[in-house]
Length: 189
Image (cartoon, rainbow, N blue to C red):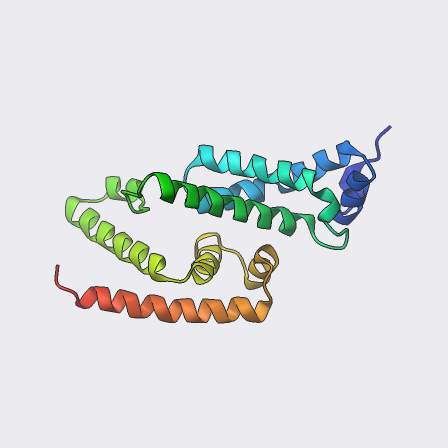
């Protein structure tokens, strides 16, 4: 009879999987799927692509479970894998099909009048442009903090950074965003 995995921490489950217990991996999957899927949806925007990336992350994590140190948190490790897969998906898209639309919230535009919708879309366009102007690492940290709602410690863990590096990246990203948005406001048209 299998042990009740609900009382076993992630490190214990990782060790069990490394010893050949595939049921332990099922428990790791159950525990962390929601967060990994959420990360992929935020990074990719498309639910179907995000689901595929999340599944691929867990497959890759299983294939490389020997690389996961038992002391390391499995959740953060699999999120790093998922994050890198999402980057790969975005790079593949950029090589094959140009991005024609900026990310926006069409639901908000449907509830408001045409003038408000236009102003909202202009704001979304400015924000997308400003985010695109950031270096990749700064953009990742800003999205994790302000769109995913993660705290600095969680960001540091999931991206393999120090807390000081996350704070520095956030500060530089906010300054750069303010400059780019201000410059956009000054341009005619």
